[in-house]
Length: 100
Image (cartoon, rainbow, N blue to C red; front, top):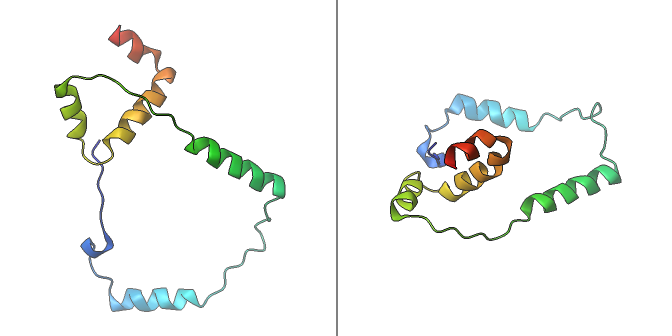
């Protein structure tokens, strides 16, 4: 799975018609009366979850040059892909059994 990044300048320029429609939307107010405010407890839980999600430890592996080259060939973000696969592995014991 290769990561694709696109900058706004790489996209087709926005048409004048679309630009006018977007400008008109900015003046509309959004009705939020049906959305309840978050409680202090809910906000505290969200903060706690965000802090927990950011906690990561450094971990080192010894891999062959060929393996490292393959991972790097996935492009920018390959270490994130490795991390997600390692985090997913406990839910797939068949992956571990296939490697033993």
